[in-house]
Length: 383
Image (cartoon, rainbow, N blue to C red):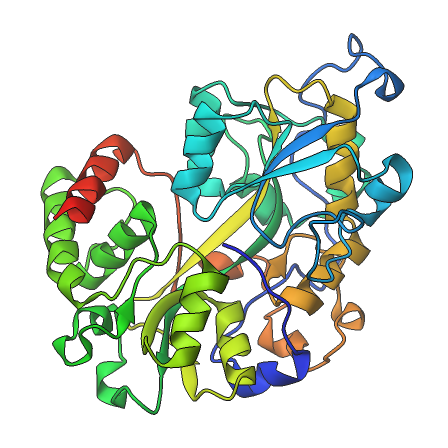
């Protein structure tokens, strides 16, 4: 997912569900601490100091020329080490993230979402973090920490999370038609629908529409049924959007699209723009996601990478990200006092550390039949 600044005062008028943050009560991490030896590594002063980062647009460190959204995360790092040594390679979906991490780079840091952690590990792209080098790690939501471990090791440091659903024009779509994911298959709105260009996400949507609760573990018969459903939906789809800001939001704002897959920030942005719209609570449940930082297996910037991530996960940086972008963050020390709009305390469901998996949300997870899914998606695109 990508990010965009929004007006906090518009949130309550637009919100149709909670986003979540960390938890209000203090809690320590249940993760193991240092997972790799640092004794044989050169000190940070001997590292080149040039970080290559695989990132979503909008999440660049404060102080870099690339950061234009007002995000303050990363400022501790750039103030200490400068911004000149940081370069970004951009991604627009999780499939592209894994592909670029595999064929490009190597990257010192990557910011994918947690469902593909096993693929990054099995391909030798990442190494576990030494959490003892992250002072704020002890403040992170233990549930999110556990969710981003693999084989007992902390391969991802969780940072941001949120929800995915259909945003629709309430002045164009009949209320009876906006009950669930089947809206994307409604012929009445042919040419006004736009799904994301994400293979896993679209198969998850199709699976939920078909009533398959294990949306990321489809058997061969279910996978074929989901593919057929997407083939049936494709003629109704105006486009599979790839960019939130050059395609998804402009098309929705202009009226070209009345129904689009998106994340919760688009709801607030479009409401602020004066559109009558809602972020659907599908009868089958919404999608939810957790994203975070992964450490490159071949990085020569071991200590710089840890310092960079610490500058993102600390309490102040996390609170500012949520106030700016309205995504949940992983730091459990963020409380009501850190939220500028006090009404967000209830709207963000701060007391629930497991909001991403609380019904009716479906946390996007690893697919054991990913190769078959990717092939099926290629067939949908080629049809």
